[in-house]
Length: 392
Length: 195
Image (cartoon, rainbow over all chains, first blue to last red; front, side, top):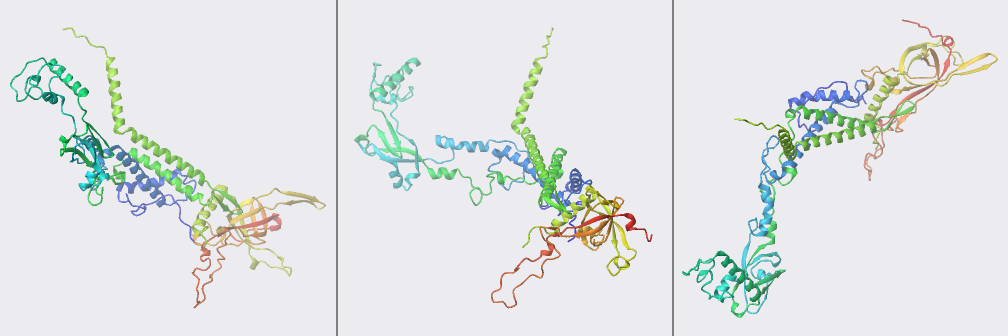
């Protein structure tokens, strides 16, 4: 078999020479491909030594280096902006060259869960229901109620029970004086209601402190002297206090609840078709594509050249390492494949680390920290300026 | 089926061998190939008159050069030196080999006993040759082909390939090693016969 050609010292790139062809028709890539091949070959010892690689090996490494650069760059962008990007339609045009302004959309979406539980907003429906009280019956099984109303008992979660004692003021309005020495018509200066706004016409002008003291006295009297209106609910078994009287018979006892499966379902966003389809749901479907090589600046390209070299070194190491010892006439010789692969791995790790640190230093957080520090330092500097005294 | 040592690997080995022997070690010798049909022999198979040689042909070689030996007897001092010249066999094949096309290699000679090697102002006569260094133990010149196949009309044919086809693409007959002994220049008497 003929000799497999190795690097002859020059090359000529044609579209199709790379495995994926991501950048084959980029004019800058076409120009740089041969230069990079020459750069790498000469860094690997050509023309003093043979470099057992072909031009396509160099082009492959070059393409991979650009893709790796783009991957690191856009992965950083995704990390930086995921909170702003989640939920976008995946048909959004590629974000490579889009300036992303932070927004609170996803923060609010994430916070809706708390509102749902607190009953002050959120994204889960609350429903109302009622059980009919029976005199002298204290316990009511709401799971049974749920089944009677076509709801799976285990799906019910009671959020609020409307069972409060009568406000002290109202009670007292009907009850009678407690230590204030007056009849029911005199409190708050009227025949009814709180704060004097009622159907009464006779107002007694009293200091506010007097009213506050009266309210406190009534509340205390309710707590000590009257039956406690309360309830407990354990595993959807409702127990109410005090024990309903026969007078309560037939009264509706209202509560609010939500359905657990609705809470789960409402936490899933759906696009068209399957749940989440069509929306940016994770880092894998954020709309980024490979970078445009001709838009990468010299800083980025320098990194790409070095990474290409590390990849070529790795490939050459693999080539020379397939047989760690190869024969020569009457003897054997050990090639430097191990050294090359180890060195290449070290170079790659260092380059990736350097790139990530560089990106981290330009993150939004880092920039704001830097700006804050600059402002502090500037202020300190200005504080050292002597204050001028103007004499008019 | 063989997997390792295919011609693609051998191609790289050839590059490395030639780089190593040519650019790094750079040991060279001149090879004089005896022309048998011009050399007259006596009834004992010895050269009766002059010997004729082709060459010299400059070759890269891995040369193992032992220490010279001097032995003294009643007749005087005997000088003895027996270097070994190790050639890359592909260098000795002809130019028609595709791996020798467009290269400086392709000497087209077969080292044999009686050939003369000139090395560092001394002549050495080939006393034996050795060509049994095979990579991965295979000599592609003996691929044992054609491989056996199912007899025509076999009732229960075995799945083919039956044995190990394509062995001509595997292995490498790598070197020719020439063991030599020192020959005094006056005994060889090589002179330039034609310009």
